[in-house]
Length: 134
Image (cartoon, rainbow, N blue to C red; front, side, top):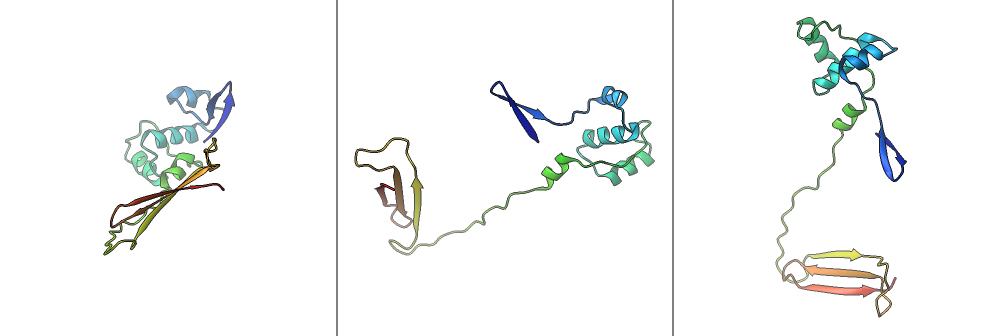
């Protein structure tokens, strides 16, 4: 989906299909527009699923046509890879250290630092904080 910034607001640019008004006003293939409309109404059902419903007469007066590219179907099939769950068993101090780096800060500290690094020992939960200049 793309957007265009107009007066500080982003207006999304995309296709909108609104029932029979869009189908009637379309200059293209009426069957293709009707197929696309039912594809979206039925939760982005597959082309084969639309054909089955059409053959059973469950879609009122609709001939199932060829589906065009659907951007929402592509986005729906994408997924994010999740980190695996790992249980850390630390047996002593400094076996496992968590670290974080924050910065750069817009304001320089009195000591001239712009970054902050924290280290946390997993076993003892002791925290160290170091200010870094660059």
